[in-house]
Image (cartoon, rainbow, N blue to C red; front, side, top):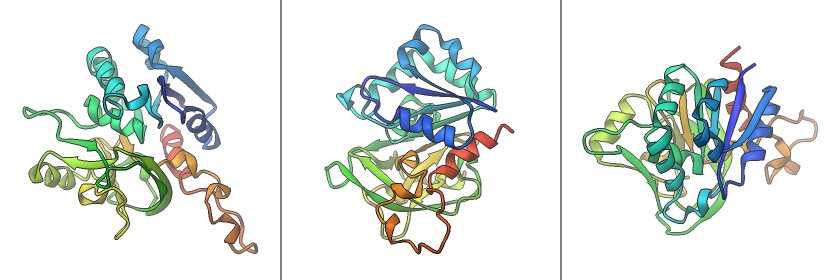
Length: 250
């Protein structure tokens, strides 16, 4: 079984829920570790096969969502993250973690013009907390294998996916990296092309704005009591993402 490392920072508030989700998915060795411990000893990452940057408001999002953690990774841990990726391991970023992966350059490689895409303020200009319907695109992403659709909650103010220009959008789309979209008519934040999540070129680094760790059990869904009691109680939609990560190393 793989070891899972959950990376937390001041303001992170979904680390324990994310660790629990991995445990429910079958992971036996899950550790929540402060960013400072990694900065002190980057080789701590070597023992893990799955690294997750969970949701929350790291450093209070005081500069921009995920910006401070992303800057620390760029300046001090870029080589460690590159080695982690090159070793065939998995990296997951959820909500604030997605913002960190994009702004650190871990998810998308920078080019001569800089970052190809970012996550910025919702089109409404407001924080939003609601459930959304999602659809997957292609089979590139390890975390989404066997998943066609999901219903998950979102909770963010800066979750609108914006590519640098149309050429970048077409390139990412053609490469099969825009793997998770809001279902038709359900884009909550004005994201370009309805993008809710994206992966790197290998499919092993994945970031998404919705929170799969908040729907691993059916009773976490607001309408769970309206189900047909004659039907067996299913698992929450988000659990499959964590199961895919754990079973990838079997």
